Image 1: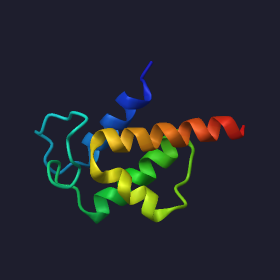
Image 2: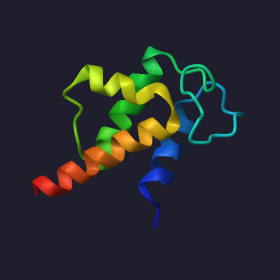
Image 3: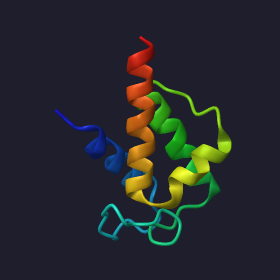
Image 4: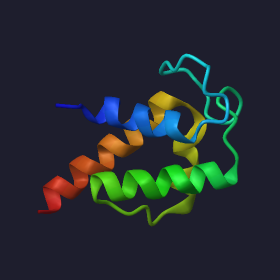
Length: 86
């Protein structure tokens, strides 16, 4: 079974322009992986669909794109919040 981290990394790789970069927690989505605004939206939609949550706070969402570890933390918190609501 895939962990949240593994699933998120797979989705991050899917939308990365620089696909040959080794992904670590410190990997930056824009600077290292070549993300642009379209890739950000695609990734956000993909994780919302994969994990069943919606990002309502745009500022909070954009801060999550600083690094891979920040984005994984963001997704994990949303998944846990959604689970607590149910």
